[in-house]
Length: 254
Image (cartoon, rainbow, N blue to C red; front, side, top):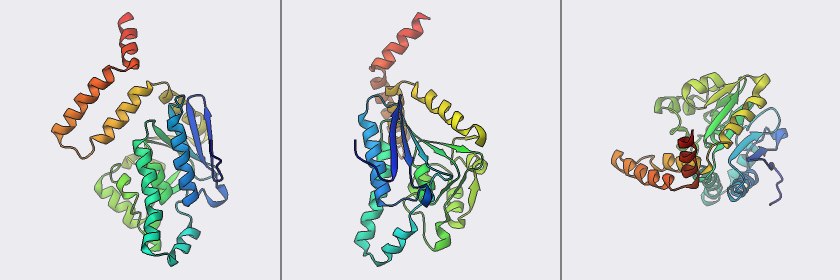
């Protein structure tokens, strides 16, 4: 297990807990955080006991986005150096999408800019009532370029355009209405609600959840006919898993 400086990683039962641990910086993202997140997700993928990954932030906020000190330093970088750093975030988002386990973000406080993108790159977002989401990069002459790829797959084109060009910070209820997040829980029972939700997900068949995630994202952009064929192939594969065979047997014995 690697040593982490800016995140926390622990496996509790069937849940791998990954925590952004820079509360003094509102859990801002930098190259080291991105690298450590990638290592933690890889570790969870190798651990057969893990059924779900829960991503959270220490302190009051989930993640405020990119570390502005790093952005300031990058003013003196060349294009290739800037591009190399940007591709680290690209690889992390691709890794999350291709990960065999569901990744669930539990958002307290603010999830802004790259932090909102990080949450959106997960499979499910659970938010506290007082949580806030947004892409305010336009206010400093920047754009959420990398996260557009995941944002556009989560909300309508017009909602995405509005969010990235106005920089508006929205409430958790608005984010739910937009389709950006999955559930909103009252702040005073947020931790208990998240735990219950995640444990319920962890109780599901690991092979079924993994195959479902893989197929859902694999058919993105396919023609209808190709999506149907991919579904047929995954249908056959799912029937051959031990979980499916055992599940059918249990059902027939009722």
